[in-house]
Image 1: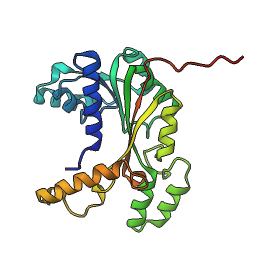
Image 2: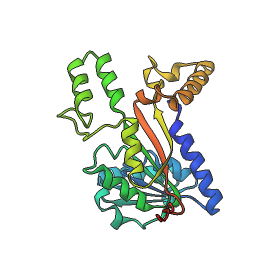
Image 3: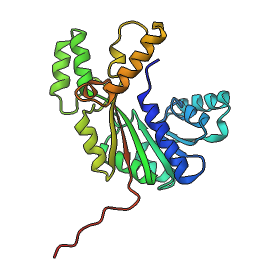
Image 4: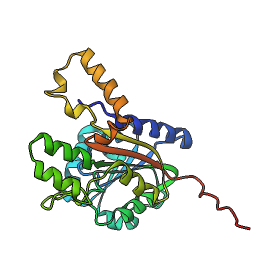
Length: 249
């Protein structure tokens, strides 16, 4: 399995939420699909709301929740990011996930603003996005040089026939979060070196698996390796108090 640097960050955030509130953390998973994040988080004791436009994905989510014995901790809501304000309680979540959704929304700024309005003051927003630089290098390694040039030259980092509307680099992701009034605390790579390892990681022995986990954890936060990861992950906080404006004399 890929060493999960994202899950470690989320575990730390949820532990902090428990210390702040003394109860089960409230998680909102926007575009949560069939529960890849929601079900494990519910199993860890969180109360999770999943907002997802696909009824088929929600049906799978409900089955997975029942199988895992966590159906009472998961609320499934069918809806799109564009109407998120109408679907959930403002400031109602300790942690908001927007994993794999900023690449497909119409307006990134509006989507991040909605995620921000959904998180409680002092809480955090976690986003996971496709990295344009990794996509360029992957095309080069596959011998698809024309596509690599197109991905590098396109302002959104996408090909014309792709379902994705955009890919991100580290500064583009940071700017999207800061522009929404969030404070970026973590900006790391996901799949920095693990996705480059030939063969199945599961075939490694204990020593190699441990070494790979340590290497992935170190590379995830270290530019320029971080900036070449398959995906980029950020955790950004909504401050408890708005920043003070100094009075001009």
